[in-house]
Length: 442
Image (cartoon, rainbow, N blue to C red; front, side):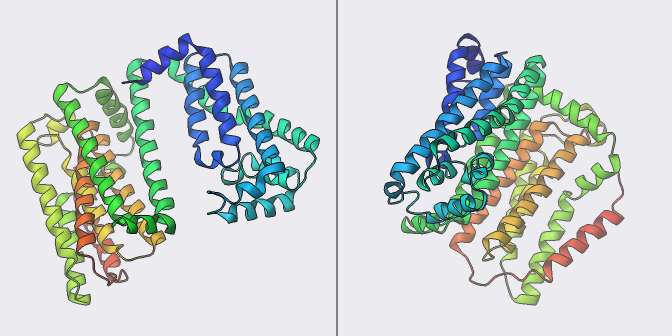
C-alpha cells in the first residue's frame, strides 16, 4: 500500500516529478470541460503540501503552477475558437447547456475582466476561456489577461498548501499524525456533505438509479452502512492491537481545551445522555401517533434500543479501560463511547424519520443539523476526559451504521405521508431545554 510516508520519501528523491505533477494538475484544472470534473483545488493543495514537506524551492512550485494554468487556459481558448460547436453536441455540454449560457452572460458583462475573475470562480473557470475563444476575443488580448491572472492565481492557490507542508516538516511524528487524522476527518465530512447536496439534487442521477431499481436514499443508506462499518472495524483494530500514539496525544490536547469551558462542555455532553435521548424519541413517536395517527416513530425507538443494547454488550465484552480522568468519574468501560453512539443514532434516526418525503433542501438541512449535534456531543466526551478519541470515533460509526440500516428499512416501508414538524419539533426542543435546566452537572 502506498502510504503518505511513501509519497514523502518518493518526492524527496524525485522533486522534478512533483514539479511536473503540479504543472499537469494546474493545466487540467484550467482545461475546458475536463476542469469541471477534476477536483483541482484539493489535489493542488495536497501536492503543494508535499512540496513544502520536501522543502522544494517555492519559486519552482509557483513557476510550475503558473505554466500549467497558462497552458490550460490557452488550450481552452483555442478550443473555443475552433471547436465550440462540436463540443456543444457532446456530454457534458450537451447535458448542461446552461453552462455555456452562464459563461456567455458573464463574459458579456465583464468582457476581458471575466478571464481574470473567472479563474478564481470554480464552476466557470474552465468555461470562460472557451467562451472567450468562441466570441472572437483577440488572441493577444486573451494571452495578456491569461498571463496576468495566472501570476496572481499561482501563489493564491499553492502557497497555503506549501506553507502547511513546511509546518508539517517541523512537527513531531505524533503531532503530524494527529493533524493528518483531523484533516482526514474534516475532508470525509465535507465529501459526505457535498455528495448528499449535489447528487441528491440531480434529477438525472435519480432517473439512472430508478432504472436500476435503486433510489438516491438507498444509495446513501448503503454508503452510511459501509463507511460506518469500515470506520468502526478500523477503530476496533487499532484499540485491540495497541492504540496509536496520536490517540493519547489527541486526547491530551482536546482534554486541555475542555478545561477552559467546563460548563459549556457539560451542557453539550448532557444533550447525549441516553435517558434523555430515549425520552426524546418516545415523545416524538407518541406525539406523531396521538396527534397525526402516524406510527413511524416506534421503529425509531426500537432501533435506538438496539444501539444502546449493542453498545453495552461491546463495552462488557471488550473491557477497555477509560482514561485516568474517566476512571475517577465513571465505573463503566470505555469502548465504544455510549454517548457518541446514542447521540449519532438518536439524532440521525430522528432526522431520517422526520425528513422523509420532505424537499431535498429541507432533508439536507436536517441531516446536517443532526450530524453537527452528534459530533459536538462526541467531542464533548473527550473534552471532559472520560473517553479516548478512538472511543468516540467508534461510537459515531456505530450510530451511523444503525441509521443507515434504518434508512434501508424505511425505503421498503415508506409512507406517502409526511410527518408534520410544527408540533413535534417544539416539543422535542422544550424537552431538551428542560432537561438541561434540571440536570445537575458533574
